[in-house]
Amino acid sequence: MAKIIGLPKLSPTMEEGTLVSWEKKEGDAVDVDDLLAEVETDKATMEFRSFDKGVLLKILVAEGETLAPDAPVAIIGEEGEDVSALVEQAKAAAPREAAAEPGAPVKETEREPEARREEPAPARPTDGRVLASPLVRRLAREKDIELAGVRGSGPHGRVIKRDLEEIAARGPAPAPARPAVPTRETRVERVSQMRKTIARRLTESKRDVPHYYLTIDVDAEPLLAFRADINAELERDGEKVSVNDLLIKACAVALRRYPAVNASFMGAEIHYHGAVNVSVAVAIPDGLITPVVRDADLKGVAEIAREVRDLAERARDKKLQPEEYTGGTFSISNLGMYGIEHFTAVINPPEGAILAVGAIRDEPVVKDGAVVPGKRLRMTMSCDHRVIDGAVGAEFLALLRRLVERPASLLI
Image (tube, rainbow, N blue to C red; front, side, top):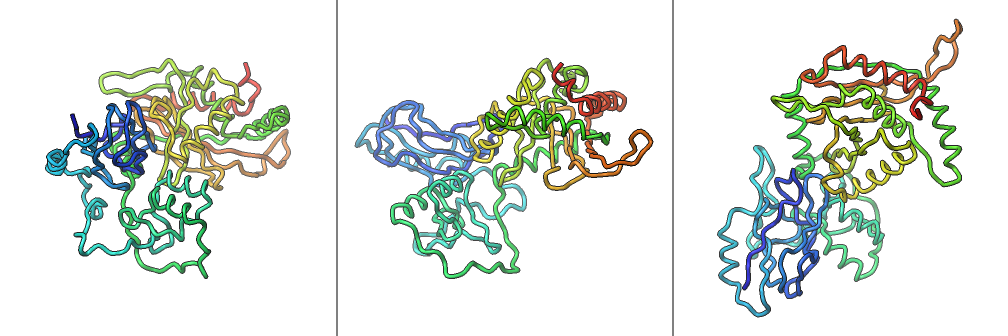
């Protein structure tokens, strides 16, 4: 018997999702656990798999539409069944797209009547950027397709998977005669699922969590020398570690030795975590995500480096699973590669603290009574005052300083 299939809640934080691509078409046979579609949530592009067996009789939503969990998306049943009544039932159900926030642009699911619909516009806002999901961007790279020249058939000219498949079938298109010239017009772009979640969580954090900030300035020369020695050993295997990998290890060791900072305020309770799970901020096209290095205190630096590279790569492709970006107990955000020497970061609840890492800078220092060239590194920890008192935060940073300036102790 035919039934309406709703959009499942694919992650604990999912409040709405964008249906990126259908992997089955109407008339296809469907088995239990078959991949039906890919859905972009607030953190990743997730697989939507079937819980039913039968035939995909009707697709109810187009690629690119944004939906609330449980919204009707398809009808599955036996071949030849009449589904007209179910189609009407789905139309009468709740609106497909989750309620827009105040001031949000017109919903992408709204369409002009067929008689007025025009040829899709190029998927290029006024500043030359292309509207496309991270999944579509990855597929375009794999197919060697330049998105700037693609006319998207999705909402607001968004490029969807079907557009790339049609281009690949036709063969490569000739390059445009000359590049598009940016204009001075204001660009209005719909807020992505990830950006909505970032905005909500950071607003809640700054509003509800009493932040205070502690800064230390450390001698980075020993850390750089230690890194050079490690990389010399790893070179034959084609591997290397970064300063950030070493800082993840240093923070993890400090948290193990000073567990008062490895804590979360949970209303009527404070949780002092047994595991040391370090969240690492990774910038991706839609914003920021914090994949977690679990049990970082128990892992070697080379293992941490491999894990961080893998997590970061899959984060940029929005392929992380929910358990890979939840459950952190402490965060690190490093903007040193951008030349930023000092900044403060917003706490990632329910974690109790986040460490903001700046650039290593050349600076004259006094050693043994003489002024000599030195390497300095400034780090600022944002603390939740409900969990971490000032003296506790200061003692933790003093321990972290000792570990960074005597990095051989990380191996003990």
